[in-house]
Image 1: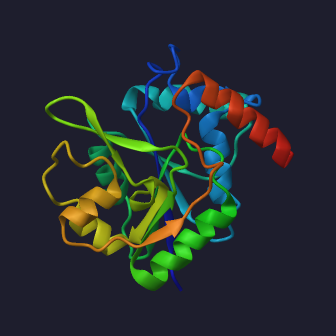
Image 2 (image 1 turned 60 degrees about the horizontal axis):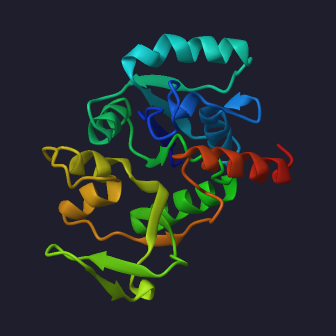
Length: 226
């Protein structure tokens, strides 16, 4: 029987949120953002083993938050690294068996259990699966010499998480030394010759980055009845 895993990467700070509190811990409808994210994976129906990757200095604070909010969903806390790349690698190192692993931004709390399940199933079939949405705005490319050039937005997609892979495949890719161009798991895998399979994601699967994102997320959660 296939085993499923989830690595929730929570290394962000509160800088762009203009907050002293790391954005994964900011309250969203009376609970920290990351708790909503963990719950989405818990409810996906695949019973994944959940790993939460946090800066080592945040482990005690997170334990306090779990106690305050009576948060009981099983998960294992892993020490984060200097970059997202190293945090994911630490999460992968904690997985000892083969299976399917989804890597997800902890600050994407509105991901639906349905999308998570679709990503697991597609990765099980195709080897990997990366969620995306199509851009709705016009796009221009900034030229090195200055100025910009219009490009066809139909030639581009915006990448989300979950990014889902066979465990052995992603572990092998993460043996590569880190370079700054590794912005997500798909870029690491592609660098190692893996062909990336795309699956359409969800508009509501937004990443909490700026203060207004938290406002929108609260409205969307209330619409869902949470």
